[in-house]
Length: 364
Image 1 (cartoon, one colour):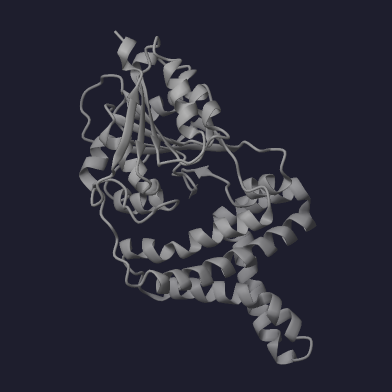
Image 2 (cartoon, rainbow, N blue to C red):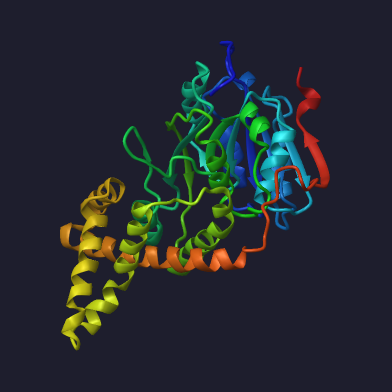
Protein backbone atom coordinates (compact mmCIF):
# COMPACT_ATOMS: atom_id res chain seq x y z
CA UNK A 1 0.00 0.00 0.00
CA UNK A 2 0.96 3.61 -0.42
CA UNK A 3 3.41 5.31 1.88
CA UNK A 4 2.10 8.81 1.21
CA UNK A 5 0.69 10.46 4.30
CA UNK A 6 0.55 14.18 3.46
CA UNK A 7 -2.01 15.99 1.32
CA UNK A 8 0.28 18.15 -0.82
CA UNK A 9 -0.65 18.25 -4.54
CA UNK A 10 1.34 15.59 -6.41
CA UNK A 11 4.13 16.73 -8.71
CA UNK A 12 4.15 14.71 -11.94
CA UNK A 13 7.26 13.73 -13.84
CA UNK A 14 6.07 13.01 -17.37
CA UNK A 15 8.56 10.65 -18.99
CA UNK A 16 8.53 10.36 -22.78
CA UNK A 17 10.52 7.42 -24.12
CA UNK A 18 11.40 7.84 -27.78
CA UNK A 19 13.25 5.89 -30.43
CA UNK A 20 12.96 7.19 -34.00
CA UNK A 21 9.68 9.00 -33.29
CA UNK A 22 10.01 11.93 -35.70
CA UNK A 23 6.53 11.29 -37.09
CA UNK A 24 4.58 12.17 -33.94
CA UNK A 25 7.03 13.43 -31.33
CA UNK A 26 6.31 17.12 -31.95
CA UNK A 27 2.57 16.53 -31.57
CA UNK A 28 3.24 14.47 -28.45
CA UNK A 29 5.33 17.18 -26.78
CA UNK A 30 2.94 19.96 -27.77
CA UNK A 31 0.08 18.00 -26.22
CA UNK A 32 2.07 17.75 -22.98
CA UNK A 33 3.03 21.41 -22.95
CA UNK A 34 -0.60 22.47 -23.49
CA UNK A 35 -2.16 20.45 -20.68
CA UNK A 36 -5.08 21.93 -18.75
CA UNK A 37 -3.10 21.45 -15.57
CA UNK A 38 -1.03 23.78 -13.36
CA UNK A 39 2.33 24.26 -15.09
CA UNK A 40 4.06 24.31 -11.71
CA UNK A 41 2.93 20.77 -10.93
CA UNK A 42 4.68 18.81 -13.66
CA UNK A 43 7.86 18.45 -15.63
CA UNK A 44 8.59 16.76 -18.98
CA UNK A 45 11.52 14.40 -19.46
CA UNK A 46 12.33 13.12 -22.95
CA UNK A 47 14.59 10.06 -23.01
CA UNK A 48 15.98 9.48 -26.50
CA UNK A 49 17.27 5.92 -26.97
CA UNK A 50 19.89 7.09 -29.52
CA UNK A 51 17.46 7.70 -32.36
CA UNK A 52 18.80 7.89 -35.90
CA UNK A 53 16.09 10.17 -37.29
CA UNK A 54 15.09 13.75 -36.37
CA UNK A 55 13.95 12.89 -32.84
CA UNK A 56 16.71 14.95 -31.18
CA UNK A 57 16.12 17.93 -33.45
CA UNK A 58 12.39 17.95 -32.74
CA UNK A 59 12.81 17.51 -28.98
CA UNK A 60 15.46 20.25 -28.82
CA UNK A 61 13.29 22.61 -30.83
CA UNK A 62 10.34 22.09 -28.45
CA UNK A 63 12.62 22.51 -25.45
CA UNK A 64 14.12 25.75 -26.78
CA UNK A 65 10.67 27.16 -27.43
CA UNK A 66 9.75 26.61 -23.78
CA UNK A 67 12.65 28.38 -22.09
CA UNK A 68 10.32 31.18 -21.03
CA UNK A 69 7.73 28.70 -19.75
CA UNK A 70 7.25 27.51 -16.21
CA UNK A 71 7.31 23.86 -17.34
CA UNK A 72 10.74 22.30 -16.76
CA UNK A 73 11.76 20.17 -19.75
CA UNK A 74 14.74 17.85 -19.98
CA UNK A 75 16.11 16.01 -22.99
CA UNK A 76 18.38 13.06 -22.22
CA UNK A 77 20.01 11.10 -25.02
CA UNK A 78 21.41 7.72 -24.03
CA UNK A 79 23.35 4.98 -25.76
CA UNK A 80 20.84 2.63 -27.41
CA UNK A 81 19.80 0.04 -24.86
CA UNK A 82 16.09 -0.55 -25.29
CA UNK A 83 12.82 0.61 -23.80
CA UNK A 84 13.24 -0.68 -20.24
CA UNK A 85 16.63 1.02 -19.83
CA UNK A 86 15.18 4.24 -21.24
CA UNK A 87 12.30 4.11 -18.76
CA UNK A 88 14.70 3.51 -15.87
CA UNK A 89 16.87 6.41 -17.03
CA UNK A 90 13.84 8.69 -16.90
CA UNK A 91 13.29 7.71 -13.27
CA UNK A 92 16.83 8.71 -12.31
CA UNK A 93 16.34 12.22 -13.77
CA UNK A 94 12.86 12.77 -12.34
CA UNK A 95 11.92 15.09 -9.46
CA UNK A 96 8.26 14.18 -9.15
CA UNK A 97 6.24 12.20 -6.63
CA UNK A 98 4.39 10.51 -9.49
CA UNK A 99 6.00 9.14 -12.65
CA UNK A 100 3.73 9.27 -15.68
CA UNK A 101 4.77 7.45 -18.84
CA UNK A 102 3.76 8.21 -22.40
CA UNK A 103 5.40 7.00 -25.60
CA UNK A 104 6.82 9.39 -28.16
CA UNK A 105 4.26 8.25 -30.72
CA UNK A 106 1.23 9.02 -28.52
CA UNK A 107 -0.69 12.27 -28.09
CA UNK A 108 -2.20 13.27 -24.74
CA UNK A 109 -5.68 14.68 -24.31
CA UNK A 110 -5.60 18.22 -22.82
CA UNK A 111 -7.05 16.85 -19.56
CA UNK A 112 -4.69 13.86 -19.39
CA UNK A 113 -2.81 14.89 -16.26
CA UNK A 114 -6.00 16.05 -14.61
CA UNK A 115 -7.29 12.52 -15.12
CA UNK A 116 -4.31 11.14 -13.20
CA UNK A 117 -4.60 13.76 -10.48
CA UNK A 118 -7.81 12.14 -9.23
CA UNK A 119 -6.46 8.68 -8.19
CA UNK A 120 -3.28 10.12 -6.69
CA UNK A 121 -4.29 13.36 -4.98
CA UNK A 122 -5.74 11.70 -1.88
CA UNK A 123 -2.86 9.27 -1.52
CA UNK A 124 -4.98 6.21 -2.34
CA UNK A 125 -3.37 4.89 -5.51
CA UNK A 126 0.15 3.52 -5.84
CA UNK A 127 -0.15 2.96 -9.57
CA UNK A 128 -2.71 3.66 -12.25
CA UNK A 129 -3.47 3.22 -15.92
CA UNK A 130 -5.33 5.44 -18.34
CA UNK A 131 -7.40 5.03 -21.46
CA UNK A 132 -5.90 4.65 -24.93
CA UNK A 133 -7.99 5.85 -27.86
CA UNK A 134 -7.24 5.17 -31.51
CA UNK A 135 -5.22 7.82 -33.33
CA UNK A 136 -5.21 6.46 -36.90
CA UNK A 137 -8.96 6.16 -37.33
CA UNK A 138 -8.60 6.26 -41.10
CA UNK A 139 -7.28 2.66 -41.12
CA UNK A 140 -9.88 -0.14 -41.12
CA UNK A 141 -7.29 -2.61 -39.80
CA UNK A 142 -6.40 -0.25 -36.94
CA UNK A 143 -10.09 0.22 -36.10
CA UNK A 144 -10.57 -3.54 -36.02
CA UNK A 145 -7.51 -4.00 -33.79
CA UNK A 146 -8.81 -1.34 -31.41
CA UNK A 147 -12.18 -3.04 -31.06
CA UNK A 148 -11.14 -6.67 -31.02
CA UNK A 149 -7.69 -6.66 -29.45
CA UNK A 150 -7.09 -3.47 -27.48
CA UNK A 151 -10.41 -2.99 -25.73
CA UNK A 152 -9.93 -1.73 -22.17
CA UNK A 153 -11.95 -2.38 -19.03
CA UNK A 154 -11.19 -0.67 -15.74
CA UNK A 155 -13.33 -2.71 -13.36
CA UNK A 156 -14.86 -3.18 -10.96
CA UNK A 157 -15.58 -6.71 -12.17
CA UNK A 158 -13.43 -6.92 -15.31
CA UNK A 159 -9.92 -5.57 -15.73
CA UNK A 160 -8.43 -5.79 -19.23
CA UNK A 161 -5.55 -3.84 -20.76
CA UNK A 162 -5.80 -1.47 -17.80
CA UNK A 163 -2.06 -0.88 -17.29
CA UNK A 164 -0.34 -0.17 -20.61
CA UNK A 165 3.13 1.29 -21.07
CA UNK A 166 2.17 4.22 -23.28
CA UNK A 167 -0.25 5.54 -20.65
CA UNK A 168 0.54 4.60 -17.06
CA UNK A 169 1.45 6.31 -13.79
CA UNK A 170 3.16 5.07 -10.67
CA UNK A 171 4.51 6.51 -7.45
CA UNK A 172 8.26 6.88 -7.39
CA UNK A 173 8.49 5.16 -4.01
CA UNK A 174 7.01 2.04 -5.64
CA UNK A 175 9.86 2.03 -8.14
CA UNK A 176 12.35 2.52 -5.33
CA UNK A 177 10.82 -0.47 -3.56
CA UNK A 178 10.76 -2.91 -6.51
CA UNK A 179 13.72 -1.47 -8.40
CA UNK A 180 12.19 -0.35 -11.70
CA UNK A 181 11.87 -2.12 -15.05
CA UNK A 182 13.57 -5.43 -15.83
CA UNK A 183 16.10 -4.64 -18.53
CA UNK A 184 15.50 -7.59 -20.87
CA UNK A 185 12.38 -5.96 -22.28
CA UNK A 186 13.86 -3.80 -24.99
CA UNK A 187 10.72 -2.91 -26.97
CA UNK A 188 7.61 -4.26 -25.22
CA UNK A 189 6.49 -6.27 -22.20
CA UNK A 190 8.22 -4.07 -19.64
CA UNK A 191 5.01 -2.87 -18.00
CA UNK A 192 3.66 -6.43 -17.82
CA UNK A 193 6.74 -7.61 -15.94
CA UNK A 194 6.48 -4.60 -13.63
CA UNK A 195 2.83 -5.27 -12.88
CA UNK A 196 3.59 -8.86 -11.90
CA UNK A 197 6.00 -7.50 -9.30
CA UNK A 198 3.67 -4.90 -7.79
CA UNK A 199 0.06 -6.08 -8.22
CA UNK A 200 -0.13 -7.97 -4.91
CA UNK A 201 1.83 -5.41 -2.89
CA UNK A 202 0.48 -2.04 -3.97
CA UNK A 203 -2.86 -0.38 -4.63
CA UNK A 204 -4.12 -0.01 -8.19
CA UNK A 205 -6.72 2.56 -9.11
CA UNK A 206 -7.82 3.17 -12.71
CA UNK A 207 -7.80 6.54 -14.42
CA UNK A 208 -10.12 6.16 -17.44
CA UNK A 209 -10.33 9.96 -17.72
CA UNK A 210 -6.57 10.10 -18.45
CA UNK A 211 -6.72 9.66 -22.22
CA UNK A 212 -3.98 9.40 -24.82
CA UNK A 213 -4.30 8.74 -28.54
CA UNK A 214 -2.09 6.04 -30.04
CA UNK A 215 -1.74 4.38 -33.42
CA UNK A 216 -2.45 0.70 -34.01
CA UNK A 217 -0.97 -1.40 -36.85
CA UNK A 218 -2.58 -0.36 -40.13
CA UNK A 219 -1.89 -3.61 -41.99
CA UNK A 220 -2.35 -7.27 -41.10
CA UNK A 221 1.33 -8.19 -41.39
CA UNK A 222 2.45 -5.57 -38.85
CA UNK A 223 -0.35 -6.68 -36.54
CA UNK A 224 0.72 -10.32 -36.80
CA UNK A 225 4.39 -9.50 -36.15
CA UNK A 226 3.47 -7.37 -33.12
CA UNK A 227 1.33 -10.14 -31.62
CA UNK A 228 4.00 -12.78 -32.30
CA UNK A 229 6.65 -10.74 -30.50
CA UNK A 230 4.35 -10.32 -27.52
CA UNK A 231 3.65 -14.06 -27.42
CA UNK A 232 7.31 -15.09 -27.53
CA UNK A 233 8.24 -12.58 -24.82
CA UNK A 234 6.18 -14.69 -22.44
CA UNK A 235 9.30 -16.85 -22.29
CA UNK A 236 10.85 -14.06 -20.23
CA UNK A 237 7.75 -12.96 -18.34
CA UNK A 238 7.02 -16.50 -17.11
CA UNK A 239 10.23 -16.39 -15.06
CA UNK A 240 8.44 -13.94 -12.74
CA UNK A 241 5.42 -16.16 -12.22
CA UNK A 242 4.64 -18.89 -9.75
CA UNK A 243 3.45 -21.89 -11.81
CA UNK A 244 -0.28 -22.52 -11.47
CA UNK A 245 -1.23 -25.87 -9.99
CA UNK A 246 -4.44 -27.88 -9.98
CA UNK A 247 -7.02 -28.99 -12.50
CA UNK A 248 -8.39 -25.57 -13.44
CA UNK A 249 -5.25 -24.28 -15.24
CA UNK A 250 -4.89 -27.64 -16.96
CA UNK A 251 -8.54 -27.61 -18.05
CA UNK A 252 -8.18 -24.07 -19.42
CA UNK A 253 -5.13 -25.07 -21.47
CA UNK A 254 -6.91 -28.14 -22.77
CA UNK A 255 -9.87 -25.98 -23.73
CA UNK A 256 -7.53 -23.71 -25.65
CA UNK A 257 -6.09 -26.69 -27.55
CA UNK A 258 -9.59 -27.81 -28.60
CA UNK A 259 -10.37 -24.25 -29.70
CA UNK A 260 -7.25 -24.19 -31.90
CA UNK A 261 -7.95 -27.52 -33.60
CA UNK A 262 -11.59 -26.66 -34.35
CA UNK A 263 -11.02 -25.69 -38.04
CA UNK A 264 -9.01 -28.86 -38.70
CA UNK A 265 -11.55 -31.03 -36.89
CA UNK A 266 -14.36 -29.54 -39.00
CA UNK A 267 -12.50 -30.26 -42.24
CA UNK A 268 -11.41 -33.81 -41.46
CA UNK A 269 -14.67 -34.83 -39.80
CA UNK A 270 -16.27 -34.84 -43.25
CA UNK A 271 -14.20 -37.89 -44.16
CA UNK A 272 -14.02 -39.38 -40.67
CA UNK A 273 -17.24 -39.16 -38.62
CA UNK A 274 -15.33 -40.32 -35.53
CA UNK A 275 -13.90 -36.82 -35.35
CA UNK A 276 -17.40 -35.45 -34.77
CA UNK A 277 -16.82 -35.87 -31.03
CA UNK A 278 -13.74 -33.63 -31.24
CA UNK A 279 -15.73 -31.10 -33.26
CA UNK A 280 -18.43 -30.98 -30.59
CA UNK A 281 -15.88 -30.52 -27.80
CA UNK A 282 -14.13 -27.78 -29.81
CA UNK A 283 -17.43 -26.02 -30.49
CA UNK A 284 -18.21 -26.14 -26.78
CA UNK A 285 -14.81 -24.54 -26.06
CA UNK A 286 -15.60 -21.79 -28.58
CA UNK A 287 -19.02 -21.29 -27.01
CA UNK A 288 -17.44 -20.76 -23.60
CA UNK A 289 -15.03 -18.16 -24.97
CA UNK A 290 -17.81 -16.32 -26.77
CA UNK A 291 -20.60 -16.42 -24.22
CA UNK A 292 -19.29 -17.50 -20.80
CA UNK A 293 -16.02 -15.71 -20.04
CA UNK A 294 -16.95 -12.14 -19.03
CA UNK A 295 -14.15 -10.24 -20.81
CA UNK A 296 -14.53 -11.97 -24.17
CA UNK A 297 -18.31 -11.84 -23.93
CA UNK A 298 -18.27 -8.06 -23.58
CA UNK A 299 -15.81 -7.69 -26.45
CA UNK A 300 -18.13 -9.83 -28.60
CA UNK A 301 -20.96 -7.41 -27.84
CA UNK A 302 -18.84 -4.54 -29.18
CA UNK A 303 -17.80 -6.50 -32.26
CA UNK A 304 -21.40 -7.44 -33.12
CA UNK A 305 -22.46 -3.81 -32.72
CA UNK A 306 -19.89 -2.86 -35.35
CA UNK A 307 -20.24 -5.80 -37.76
CA UNK A 308 -23.71 -7.21 -37.08
CA UNK A 309 -24.65 -10.37 -35.21
CA UNK A 310 -23.66 -13.14 -37.67
CA UNK A 311 -20.63 -11.32 -39.06
CA UNK A 312 -19.42 -10.23 -35.64
CA UNK A 313 -19.69 -13.73 -34.15
CA UNK A 314 -17.86 -15.26 -37.13
CA UNK A 315 -15.16 -12.58 -37.13
CA UNK A 316 -14.53 -12.80 -33.39
CA UNK A 317 -14.53 -16.62 -33.50
CA UNK A 318 -11.85 -16.53 -36.19
CA UNK A 319 -9.87 -13.98 -34.20
CA UNK A 320 -10.02 -16.10 -31.03
CA UNK A 321 -8.76 -19.17 -32.88
CA UNK A 322 -5.90 -17.26 -34.50
CA UNK A 323 -5.06 -15.42 -31.28
CA UNK A 324 -4.80 -18.57 -29.18
CA UNK A 325 -2.84 -20.36 -31.90
CA UNK A 326 -0.35 -17.49 -31.88
CA UNK A 327 -0.20 -17.44 -28.07
CA UNK A 328 0.25 -21.20 -27.74
CA UNK A 329 3.07 -21.57 -30.28
CA UNK A 330 4.61 -18.21 -29.41
CA UNK A 331 4.72 -19.14 -25.72
CA UNK A 332 6.29 -22.50 -26.51
CA UNK A 333 8.93 -20.95 -28.75
CA UNK A 334 9.58 -18.17 -26.24
CA UNK A 335 10.04 -20.67 -23.41
CA UNK A 336 12.65 -22.50 -25.50
CA UNK A 337 14.27 -19.33 -26.85
CA UNK A 338 14.73 -17.76 -23.41
CA UNK A 339 15.26 -20.97 -21.44
CA UNK A 340 18.84 -20.02 -20.53
CA UNK A 341 18.30 -16.25 -20.41
CA UNK A 342 18.27 -14.83 -16.89
CA UNK A 343 16.21 -11.76 -16.08
CA UNK A 344 18.40 -8.66 -15.88
CA UNK A 345 17.48 -6.69 -12.74
CA UNK A 346 16.89 -2.93 -12.98
CA UNK A 347 20.08 -0.90 -12.66
CA UNK A 348 22.36 -3.70 -13.85
CA UNK A 349 23.25 -1.77 -17.00
CA UNK A 350 24.59 1.73 -16.52
CA UNK A 351 23.17 3.66 -19.44
CA UNK A 352 25.73 5.90 -21.11
CA UNK A 353 24.32 9.41 -21.25
CA UNK A 354 25.36 11.04 -24.51
CA UNK A 355 23.85 14.48 -23.94
CA UNK A 356 21.54 16.39 -21.61
CA UNK A 357 19.66 19.56 -22.49
CA UNK A 358 17.25 21.48 -20.29
CA UNK A 359 14.91 24.45 -20.43
CA UNK A 360 15.89 25.52 -16.92
CA UNK A 361 18.15 28.41 -17.87
CA UNK A 362 15.41 31.04 -17.92
CA UNK A 363 13.12 29.51 -15.34
CA UNK A 364 12.91 31.57 -12.18
